[in-house]
Length: 430
Image: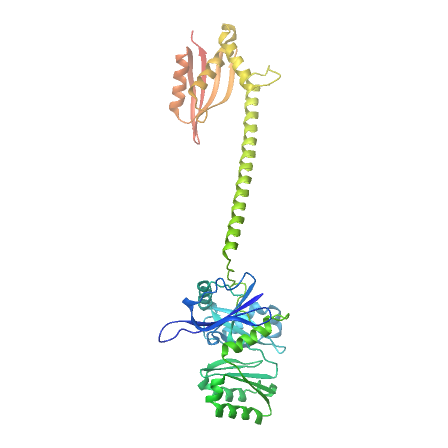
């Protein structure tokens, strides 16, 4: 697994150009590629790494607020719920605009919380999209530096100073170094626990500010602390050394990751991965289409069976003497043909034959439906309950039957919902 470390800088005030440092490390922690002060527009990592790559984005420390709060014992079990209320009292920003991440919780209830504006988090992730990277970790520079519980780490270069201990994380211009040291010395909660100091300096600072560096070392030694002096090429190199020591070993890194569940960038895919993803999507679409077609087929089959049962039921009502129904269409046609051939003693079948033939001729199954048929043997008349969409259809149906030599009387016609329910009496003309 390769490791990509990207260190974002603030925009240059004069040129409005934002730059970054980057370095690529192999599994053994050996640096393979890298560069310093590269413009965002010029950064291109495509083709330099494979799919098995982890990425760490280091953001400017001064853009991340570090708040220390005291957590009551009763609230420690539900710390995430009460965290915004505790932090709100110690920061000036509106708490609803801040993304909060717990750094650590000490045994005495002291909690260190990192707070960063949501807009800044989104801006960093947008820059990741621009750089075509998806970081696994996003953390400020001060969080990357590791130190023992009794150790104070002071990094110095020509521009800035970083101070890190178990209870302090600071980054400021190097001109503020004397006041920062005095502040730490006056901190009663921090000073008694410190027994060793690691002074890390660039070669340029050590040569130009040798007197100040020696004085700082002497000051710590006079306080009874063990001082170790280390020279590093640059802040980025020092941070990379700290990161590789944590990430490329079996133990999990102990720096704070601002990428919680609320902020998880999408990992980029190479061209092969994109085609593979497209293939998966196409397969899913084909599968869904097959399922849809099968579902439609089953639905239509069930619908057809239901309609068939309705037709058979209506046929049984019209011809109860038919014990066995094999083919409704053929049997109905036979009844109609026989009805047309019968004499005056078979008025019912003759009337039904004419009515059925006329309904079929009108060919309006969606707007003309027969609901009930009754035959009065004493008066040789047919009572027909029929539903139509419009009253004009009822008149048309009456006229068509009249033209076939039948006497048709509309007994009633009422509108119900979107249908006109009519009752007709059909007789042979005298």
